[in-house]
Length: 248
Ligand SMILES: NC(=O)c1ccc[n+]([C@@H]2O[C@H](COP(=O)([O-])OP(=O)(O)OC[C@H]3O[C@@H](n4cnc5c(N)ncnc54)[C@H](OP(=O)(O)O)[C@@H]3O)[C@@H](O)[C@H]2O)c1
Image (cartoon, rainbow, N blue to C red; front, side, top):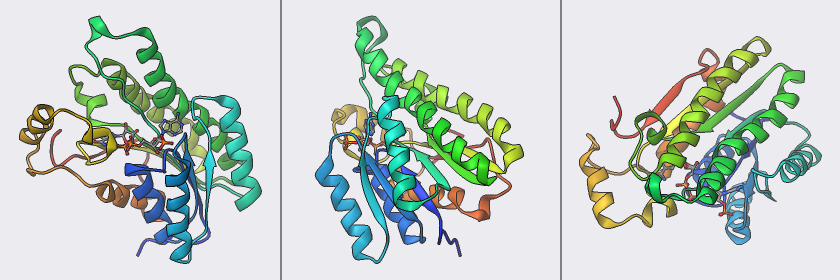
């Protein structure tokens, strides 16, 4: 049985979708959980309430992961409330899709800043804490798009591929300190991010999924729970696909 009792976890972008499912699942496994969000305060509070109602410990923290000052203050709040940090899940992400020749510079920048620089900002702060304790788990949420590409998502694909290279580099740096760094690459998971896609795009995606259905946020959370636990102590620098077989 996986057990995260006594562990503290910070999940970025946990007000909705995949991050929300991860926060609730890690709390179910016994972790105390910091629920980060950018603007959906009410939804983040609802996640915290749900965890507390089930007997867990949780707090909501507003912070833009792309903003270093916000990130510094977020880590201070986690340490002030919980005293330690054992698990970081870099899940916050956005998309600003468009074909390359029409892609605005601001859309490129926004996606790279949030999806890639955000991972750097948070991993750096977490590593500082974890190195001292000689233990820790960093789990970064990439995407099948970062591995296989996708027309109309060059900014998103660049950021998500960047997460994979970044994670492998820091997995090597942090391995001697007993910190494991892994990547989860979801396929098409039903959330707000995918709900807004045109029906034709959704159908095209479905045709490319051997298991014949979209994934659920919970199915990503199960893998994150395993990677956050001591059952995965010998796994680092890996990319685990949760995509119904889209990429093999
Ligand atoms: N859904 C999929 O099919 C799929 C597939 C592959 C990978 N992914 C990845 O999985 C992650 C979660 O996706 P999702 O589908 O659950 O997305 P979502 O439903 O759109 O939720 C995104 C979450 O990220 C937060 N967020 C956005 N920008 C942020 C920022 N600058 N700072 C802090 N938090 C921020 C949002 O907070 P607010 O609520 O406050 O805006 C929200 O909690 C993303 O990294 C995404 O790229 C998703």
